Length: 316
Length: 175
Image (cartoon, rainbow over all chains, first blue to last red; front, side, top):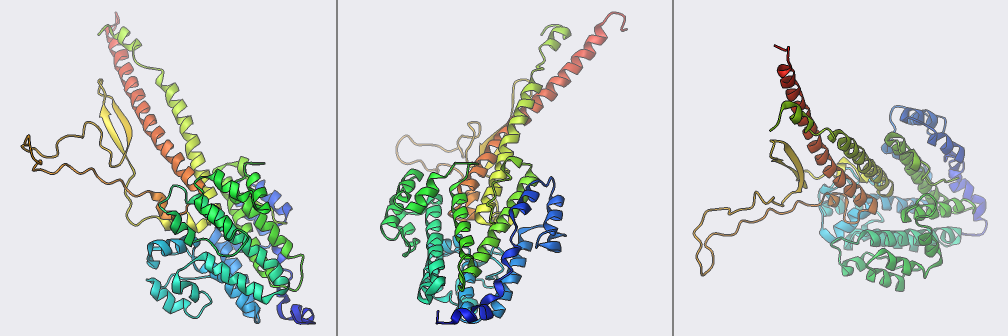
């Protein structure tokens, strides 16, 4: 960042301040888990920043639309290079990750994935992959990924390079976050691939080519045939070793829970630094986690599984 | 056969206990299945595990086979689709088979196994979704057992009622 640019950062990009206060607090979660019915849950949510938006319906789509409205506000007021940064953020929603991998491997039609895409990245109007490219994606930063093969990891890699080239605090905060995101996908999808028809050769093409795991760790993961072998790969990397060792600990946490919890910690820490764009990324990711938490609590209430209701991930 | 009194004592009355036990057992897999689905939605996104992913054409993975026992009782059994019970296996067509040389009529083809519904949700589904499928499969088997037990109890009750009426008619002074 240019000298003195911090002086103008808040003028140009400081409109996120105050939004972080809209995140649910620990006390809010304590109130929510004590609700006996979904109506109680809605009433308690009305006392939070969600207000009356969920009064008539409580479903993830309503919460997602609210987040989209906030994000559009950021985009409409943004200047470069923040505008490009925010566009990169929407790229991950333009394609469903699993659908992208299926398209790479099975040339699945876009028409077969109706209505599953996030509102931040609508791709429902095209019927074939080429229609999708020509109509929507050719002018977006997503275009290069579609020219060869759609891949969440190639998108992450390009976003990573953008942040690294930008430098400054944005790079210091975003690069580790994006590396962790790529590695999380790698570990989780390797585990989920057991018992499927994916061959090791197919699998290697989907691995990212950045982050600490590249290349030795990824090669070892491609050879792994069960969870224990994947754990032994993670043991070589301090952060992931701790996460794998915590699996099954207090509350029977899964590996996905551990990854989400670590991601939340990284995103919360992003707010401790100033004059960088990572706070926008962190805010959206924390709101997504908050949505997952609320939906989980609602599911436990409706299914009367109160033993598991505290398995959400606290944010603040 | 014995007197109506002797026959009524042979009517099975232990089945309600078995039925209660089976019903209680069925609650656990169903409950775990729904919780596992909630976990899958947590991991994949609420919109990624729902009716939007259902295939336009669905084929059942399991079928319910009924059979009659000796007393005319119906028993229910869950069978995987595409697998034939021993009663159904037999020559598909009547044909003269030669001792030597290839048979003129083709062997009956076994029906293909239906696609795994897990594939509707993607290739890389989380473990929780597989757990949900396993739980619901267990619940299906228990549902068939419960139906068989309920049938047996209803049959037993009807038998008991008939025998009690016959007993009343045979009692002295009933005429």
